Length: 158
Image (tube, rainbow, N blue to C red; front, side, top):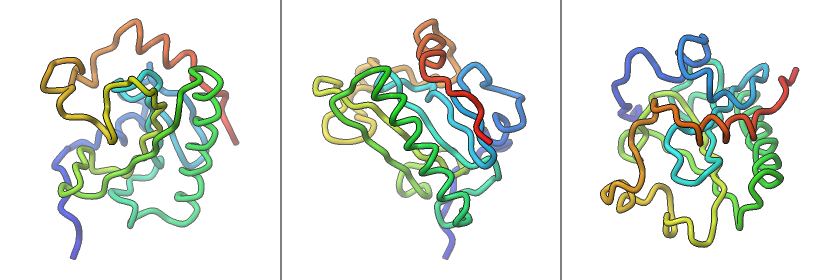
C-alpha cells in the first residue's frame, strides 16, 4: 500500500531543480542531487539534500540516487563542521504524511546541533514554532539565511 503524500503541485523541490525558485539557497549542485539551505533555520546551517529526479519517498529512490544523497550529506556535514563547529549532527528524513513529510519529494535534512539549540531531543521542536521563535515561512529570504548559504556553498561536483 503506497504512503499518503502531501498535496503540493507543482513540487517545490522540482521547481528548485528546474531553476525557477529558491536559487539563493543552493549550496551544492551535483549530477544526481541538489543541496539547499533549509528556509526554516531551526538551527543555523540546517540543510536539505534531495535527488534531482522526482522521487516522492525513500522507497522511490534508485540505489544510485540513495548513494548520491548520502555522499552529498557527508560532504555537507564536513562543511558544516568546519563552518559552525556544532556539538553534533542530526540527519532526519520523513516518508508520508504520517511521518510529517511536507514536500512530496524525498529529502534528507542535515542539521548541526548545539547543546542549547532549543530543539530538545528531536526534529523540529513544535514548541519553538508555537512560541513564534521559528518562522514557518521557508520562502522568506533574510540576511542571515543569505550569509549562511554563502558560508556553506560548495563548488559543483561532477
